[in-house]
Length: 272
Image (tube, rainbow, N blue to C red; front, top):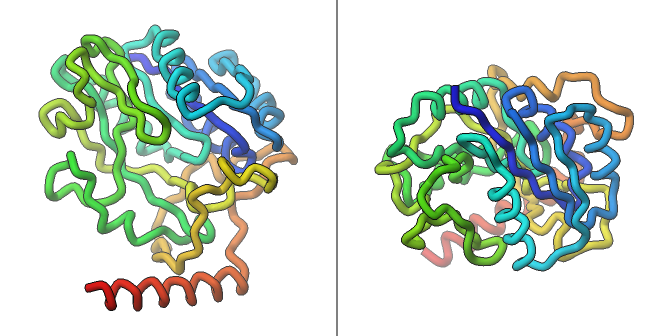
């Protein structure tokens, strides 16, 4: 069975990092977690997870270029067949991790990566951004709709390295071609998804505007159906310093989201 290392780089992710790591640690052989200068409780929360698989290092504040160097360091320290990129604001349901492990187990040597779609949450965990349905990743098959990213890669891709600067970095082969550009020729595409909290507040610390909540959005969003299965990790007993995932949006947030969503809709109609 193919083994797996998880690569995680965080800064001020105290609201979701516990869920992100707890959701995937049972599926990984090793988890490399680098903190890049958090001012909130992110490091403290990570240390509450007592698991020898987790190698946690505080690297201090870094530039966009240095961030890519940390990705390269994680790549060079990986000894497993595959590695998976998991950010501190991504929560994977068990069914998605099971499907991923099965995909890399069965992958031929010609398959270099696995693409996974996300539910991009807005306002709270009960609502998601419409782009999660309508967006089409440029390198995906035509019928593969929804917000998607290359998340898992084979470690022995010839000349594999990471190039560019955050947030436009790319994993490339010996020819300098980004792996994602090969599309279905080299990539597998999962059916199941993970939750992405990038549009939600990710920390209680509000003094680092350059990195904190940089993608936060107010949006009415679409409500998950009653049959939707949330990640199992949301139901686990958590340390007292970890925020509950179940907080619903306030009436104020709903009002702002409604107004801004209507304004965005009107603007799109004018520009058509």
